[in-house]
Every structure is written in structure tokens, then in C-alpha cells.
Amino acid sequence: MGQKGKEISKLDHKWLLNELNKAYAFEWVVHYYASLAANIVSGLATPVYAEIFKKASEGELGHANRIAKRIAELGGEPALSMSEIEKTAGIGIIRFPENRSNIKGFIKLFIKMEQHAIELYNNLAQATHGKDLVTHELAEDLLSEEVAEEEEYENLLRE
Ligand SMILES: [Fe+2]
Image (cartoon, rainbow, N blue to C red; front, top):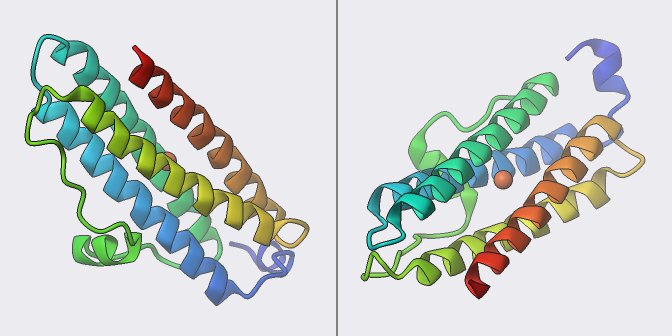
């Protein structure tokens, strides 16, 4: 980021980069698990749900890339290895239902991940409010997407 661009961010950059890195890592982990889910779900409804998870996976990667861009603007770099991503994401190992046609079991796990993301972006949006408008806008934008995704998953649970 240019000098002025950095100046107008009134937050401790080290702290901010750390928070953004957590979000980046988290998005990558969700991207991975959604892609995995798309590849392993089975049963009658497989094509429908495989497509839903595939789209979700692409969406999460898009989020990760937007965060990476912001990290670069602030003069940082995202996690440099997959092991660092796993460590930084802070959600542990996700275990999908043994029964691969238990779609609701899959969805419940993704709801948990969405809720984690909602908390993450809600905190980031609050911490950056009035202090780093660019990150604030990004956090708000991602927050509204995660909120919508949580609702979509919840609706699928009711089907
Ligand atoms: Fe996301």
C-alpha cells in the first residue's frame, strides 16, 4: 500500500495483520472442507448438494483472496504454508458424518463454520470502525455474506 494509504489506517498494523491472517486462514480451511464435502457426499441428493458445496467452496476462496489483497495493501503476507493455515485458522479438525449421505450432518458443520466467520468479521468490523475504513468495509461486506450463507444453510436444514 502507498504511504498515505498506510497512514490513514489508525490501527496497530501488526495486530491488524494478525487478525486478517486468521481470517485468511479460516477462509482457506472452509474452502477446503466445502470442496471435500462436494467430493464425498453421497446418496440420492448428491448432485444438488455437491453443487451447493462446490459453490460455497469457490465463495470462500474468493473471500480468502479479498483478505489476501488487504493484507498485501497493509504491507504483510498471508500464511506461507498449509500447516500454518491450519494452525492459524483455529477451528481444529472437522469430521464429516461417517454416513456420507447424512446431508444434514454436513450442513450442521458448515453452519458452525459460518457462525465462526460471523463472529470473526463482526469483531473485525467493530475494531476497525472509524479507524481503518478500507478494512472496515471489507469486514462489513464479508460479514453480510456470511450472515446470508448461514441463513441459506439453516433453510436447507428445514427441507
Ligand atoms: Fe467466508
